Image 1 (cartoon, rainbow, N blue to C red):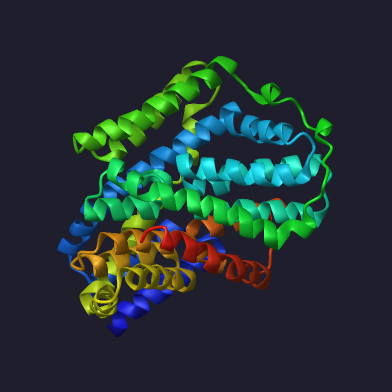
Image 2: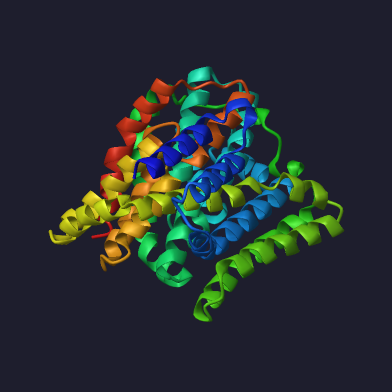
Length: 417
């Protein structure tokens, strides 16, 4: 147990800290190799892990590539400008519309896509509007929170969703039917509590005449219109693929590469640049970290958590769901949601309570918002802001996260019961 725990802790610290630019995938692989050499895991365990995460990881890569292509043609910038124009100069209306936009982008293009792509666009528009620092920070905090809290409705909306759906064999349609209500509850309650916490920093009026027309930012209007049909087709393909038990990565990755090829053919994007800049480190991060976590399973940690979950399952469904969600949320906030979802999935394997599986997902998606290092999306979001000269301190972020996350989490968990 000690060796496995030390490898896990050191790997996690280096993933969060990233000393001297050490990339997250490289760190996770080093941790996995250490676990293999020290006998914490076997080579057979590595093969088991690969079989668990390959579909999730490739699907996630596909979604991010598609997001990058759409971003390159001006799709998201058009959406942000359209949102601003529809506010008709009302600061409060713009605040709510920006949250709705974030919720839609997070649902369709994953939380990391919303954090990486939408954040710089919104920040640039806020600066064009000459908003003060507190107002800009309010919009950014709202956008950062909704990127994770709204990553619930589809299997591909969050890497934690994909990993869990694959592990328990949950199909695309089944997952969506179970998570649509929690998604809408999460978006609605997030909007309510974000407004309560941040309303003092939201101006009554905004001079939207400073912004360009949405259509002016599109590189290829014909491709932009085609993108809407392509996205609708892709969603339908996910559903059809579920009926025939086709892995989601087949559609996500092939769909992304097809759209990339079309965009490249029209000379709207440079395909080699997109492929080069895709987050390939996520592949090594998922494989490496899961191997390290599997070492904790072999050492008996997940067995201890299983005892806790068995006790909860023996209580009422309300207690089981809420407590499981808060347990997952607490672990995610302390040690990041990716290792948490892996540990909790393994621990839940023989419990036999479907609602607790979904509660685990909700907890792992919302819980990370309580600390800056709770999720990869938040780490990337903060890194993106830092490059744009926007710094949010550890305590400022944690204070905000600890205030807003518990009530939103509780209401979303109650929607599962």
